[in-house]
Structure formats: structure tokens, C-alpha cells
Length: 134
Image 1 (cartoon, helix red, strand yellow):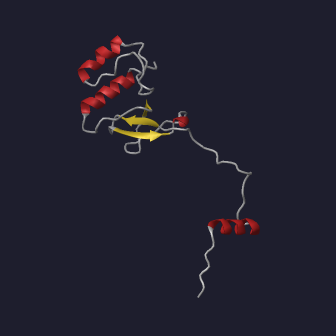
Image 2 (cartoon, rainbow, N blue to C red):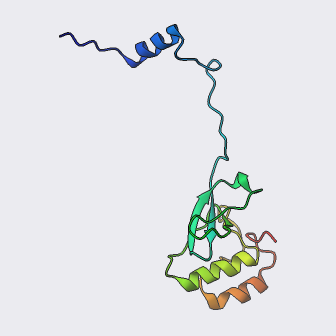
Image 3 (cartoon, rainbow, N blue to C red):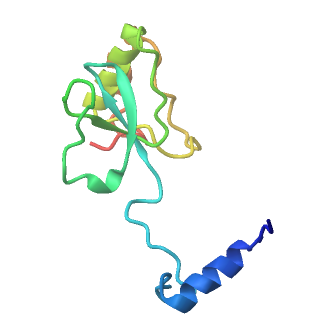
């Protein structure tokens, strides 16, 4: 019994020759259907975060767990642990006030607050903050 080893290149050339492999365009690269990156979306009901394509902004992003609407938090969002209820409340209040988590972090504005007791004063004192979009 003789085993024939045929390289992948030889098989591809054979398929091209008999018409089973069609090459669209010469040297063309496949086109992307989505954006170059995914953004973080949060569900405040489930206390979970999901990465999704921000180009679909015309359609509401739906939570796969509770079917509620997901909120766009920005590319640099780091979700708190699910059990950290106060941290999720901080994130929710910041989101409602128009703060998003994006950018390189190289700005002179103060850092976003981590504790619940600092949030309201922070929002009132930073109406023109770099991370605020409203």
C-alpha cells in the first residue's frame, strides 16, 4: 500500500484547476462587517457587562440574561464584581450623569470616584469633566 502525501498547496491548485475553488479578486482581503473594536455594555439589573459592537447603536443592545436594555459604558469600563452592590450603584449614578469610561487616562481632571458617598459631590463639582458626554 502506497501512501501519497499531497501538500495543501497542491490540493488547492488542483481544486482551482477543476473549478471547485474560486478566488474572488486578486489578492483581496476579506471585508469587515463590524467595527474595529467592541465596547462594554452594562446591565444594571443583572450587574453584568458584555462586549458588543458599537456600530449597531441604532438598535438597542439587549441583555441576554434579563432582556433589559444594556447601557454603553465605553471601551475602558472595568465592571465591578457582581456582589459589589455599592460599586454597581456608583457606576449606575455616574452613567446617569453622563460619565463614560473611555480615553487614555492622560487628562488633568480628577479620577472617577470609587465610593458611593463621594459620587453626588463629584458629579456636582465636575460638570465639564473629560469623561462626561452630556
